[in-house]
Length: 151
Image 1 (cartoon, helix red, strand yellow):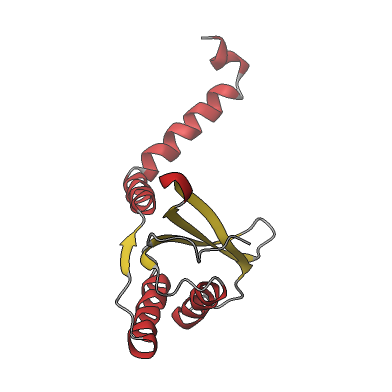
Image 2 (cartoon, one colour):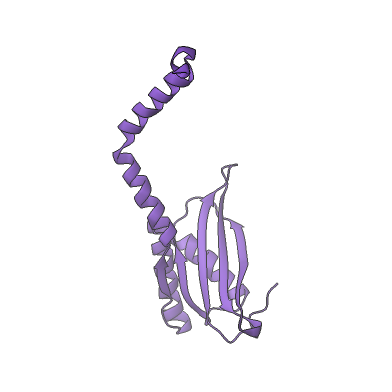
C-alpha cells in the first residue's frame, strides 16, 4: 500500500464507474500527486465492485472510505469525474460531509473533458444516423454482390 503520510503535496483524484463485459459495475479511484524527487505520480488507490444503484450516497461513501483508508481526507484538492448526475450528487454529498464533520475546505470538482468530448461526438453522430445507415446499406450491398464489387 502506498503511504501518503510523507507526501507534502496536495492530491488530485480521478474516478470512474463503468460496467464490465460480465455486466458487473466497478469504480476506480486514482490519486495524482507530486512525490519523491518532485516527480508527478499516479497511483490507483481503489478498484472496487459498486453494486447498483450507483446513487450519490453510495459514491460518496466509496470515496470517503478510500480517503479514510489512506488518511488523505485533508490532502484532496480536486476530483475529476464524468458529468453523470449521480457523480455530481456524490461529490456534493462528500463536500458537505467534509465541511460539516471534518471542518475541511470544499474539494474542487472538475468534469472529465474526454467524457464531454465523447458525449458531444455521439450526439453529433445521432444527427447523421439516417445518412450513415443508408451508407452502410449501400456498402453492404456492394460487398455482398460479386457483380457490384467488380466495378
